[in-house]
Image (tube, rainbow, N blue to C red; front, side, top):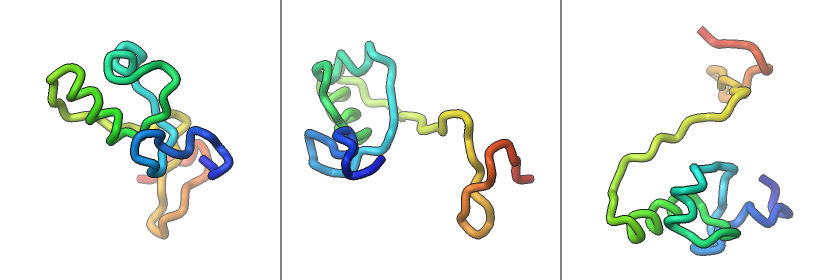
Length: 81
């Protein structure tokens, strides 16, 4: 996300906010609608709201681009072996 994107900054901690999502029922339990929160702040709010501590999975959305040995993304559709 670019710095010009209003969702690029977490409204809670002021840190960088990557592009991510969570199911709306989880979001609405933890935060008010319309809030912009980074994953760390969301998890903290979710734990405070629910009393539930959990491990969260971070998985890439499709289409996914593999990173080559030099740290560069591969072209879409190419799979590294």
